[in-house]
Image 1 (cartoon, rainbow over the protein chains, first blue to last red):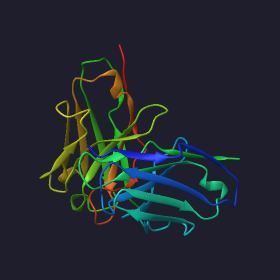
Image 2 (image 1 turned 60 degrees about the horizontal axis):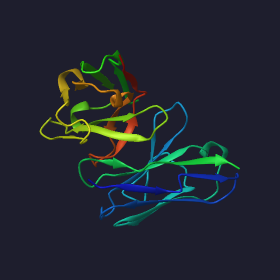
Image 3 (image 1 turned 90 degrees about the horizontal axis):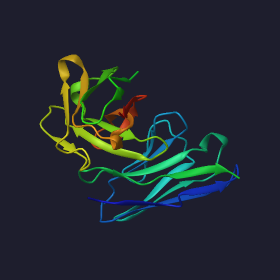
Image 4 (image 1 turned 45 degrees about the vertical axis):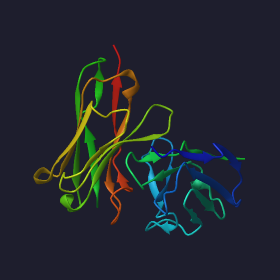
Length: 107
Length: 120
């Protein structure tokens, strides 16, 4: 199975900050990576797919990069509605697997 | 508007069975793969199972393989998860999710979930 390791597990940031979250796969997954945002009590929402493609309706301050084993989600200027937990997910092979999550908290 | 509505959750004793359902609307159901993803209380996301548009291909997490069975009825726009031999560690909110776009293994959107509690 492919293991997905996210870091950090939590980050404290202020509105307007640039935030970067990393995700590492235990083996190469090409660009078969997605990022999701989950707010408390809500279902997750797809932000980025194919490592760097922005899902329709997602603000352009979100961006993704990487391929192979190392990936990054960047929020260029953190907004109040961005405080949430973020998960990466590999879509390369079954079983599909998620990272452990990164909680973005208010500083 | 795409809607996914899960049902069938509840309190069940260890070793017993439960069948979850997901009613889909707002899209051509038989064009898309579908998935179940769960989240234990206070924990992260865990993919449980997925099924192709025509039921020709299925996949399972190691933790549920041999105990859970995914199926779909395209005539009824419905997805199912038959869960047997339930364990305490199966306690979670179970989400139904649609294939996102052209790739079968990303999820968008998700339903609101149905809670399964396994306890004596």
